[in-house]
Image (cartoon, rainbow, N blue to C red; front, side, top):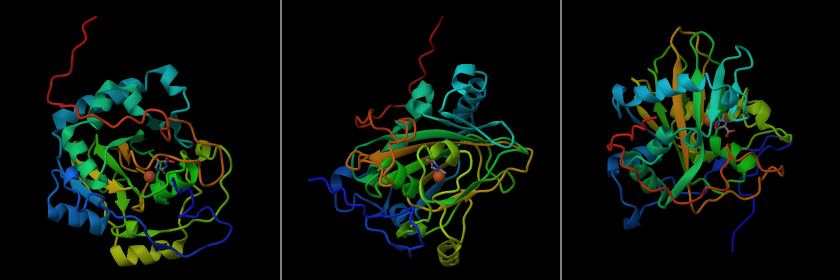
Length: 312
Ligand code: 6CS
Ligand code: FE
């Protein structure tokens, strides 16, 4: 019998204290079936910090085509005019493109790369599917920031994600340095659920993806968790990979440098954690934000096979 109780009440009328998470961080402990490439040291670090950083996971050459394809998409008028493309409200430049794995075969294959999928299944202890994918693009001088938040808090409230059994993979398509607005994370923050204050209006996503106002923790819990765990901003060359737990608090500053910061995100959810009705009570968000149809377990794809060059 599926449990639809809301174990993580949020978007409340008044502030409520954070409380310890109810789910394991690594879901495959004591389950040999989901063994994978991560050794005990990496699993323990993920459990402790809520993320793993792999500098230079792929070579620059390996990710260059993804960045080139992104530039090409900006010329696709039909795509640029669709709801799944978010434009920066200040600069008018591209901010995010959602459902990249539906738009591009190259991106779809990457989500099924054995080197990533093996780690993800190990962390989630099950088969997985893609809950959401996006490119977050921060042009030089213009790229906007993202307030502190837990992705799970949004996905629970607005997509009906029942439990903390999802992980985001973020592939750096450009250099991420201290100047161009790298992702910042609070190590250990995933161990607590931080309820937030504020009623969620229908179609909130039309505003929140441009500038997130709801789902931002109050300053006191942020201060406590940052004092406890510090703040980390992993930096590295294109091809670097970040895996972060769905409930790890993260944010990023505006990009005031002349250099772009483009990162690809793809979110893996356990097939045992399928979306229910949104716990905020609103209608479900569009499929490109919270997948409710393509839920088949992802099959590994060996990305070493050369891409099929389709001749005209
Ligand atoms: O609403 C969402 O699903 C998106 N919002 C943020 C700020 N991060 C996660 C996700 O892309
Ligand atoms: Fe986020």
